Amino acid sequence: MELSGIGRTAIAANSGRSSQGSDTAGARAVSKAKLGARGLQLLSWLAPVAVVIIWEWLAQAGWLSPHVLPAPSKVIRTAFKLATTGTLLNDLGVSLLRAVSGFVIGTAVGATLGILVGFSRIAEAAIDRSVQMIRAIPFLAVLPLVIVWLGVGETQKIFLVALGVTFPIYINTVLGIRQVDPKLLELGRVQGLSSLQLIRRIILPGALPSILTGVRYALATAWLALVVAETIGAQSGIGFLAMDAREFLRTDVIVLTIVIYALIGVAADGIARFLERRLLAWHPNYGAAR
Image 1 (cartoon, rainbow, N blue to C red):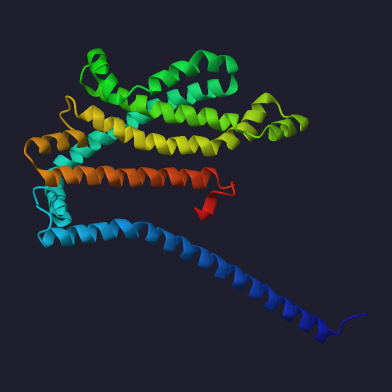
Image 2 (image 1 turned 60 degrees about the vertical axis):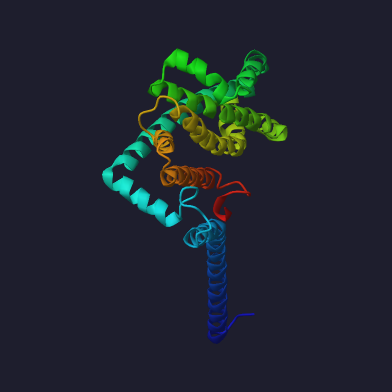
């Protein structure tokens, strides 16, 4: 049965309204998702902001001695003063350079060893036990020997950072490779993929979530190792700034360095989360929802 011109016009109009309604519903869903993500971001900052407000109130009310724990306003004034003189920015730049250098070296070593052990049982037998033994040694225990080997210069500090970064990257790389679903590997072989294609298309994407988790742990460990390294023989850096402030009982400077470490940790974790969203957009547990 043929439709008249009026019928066709009505159907087209209804279709247009339906499409418009669908677009509107989709826009509303996207808007709600954005509002939800922003709400979660604001909620994540609620506790730190509340702590700072309570801290300031207790300090202003006299419940906290300025020699024990100075008020946040005092710490901010100290940061501004050190920044204007250039001391803070110089020490921060030195520490960042050490941390980045050690992180790059440690990541390269940890990933290389992790890939070897992840793909080869022979490499695991030859390497893994030694790596685990070294990993169990605390930083403070190995520090005197590192000083004897490398002195107290930049090499010693970068080495300690690289040493701390290596192990989280190594362990999570091995774990990620070993946890790839064997059924996916079998499917790839059935599809005729070569060994290189299996690694590039199945194994590395499957191991990537675990590897990026190792990166997040390694970023935190890098700063922990740097704090230990900068307490011995340093003439610059955030750790040196804290140790120098301790000698003169400058608790405001000490608290400032702690706050800087916390903010750097938040920024580093944000970078890791950004990499997860970009590199794991295909993964149901990552992507835009995080």
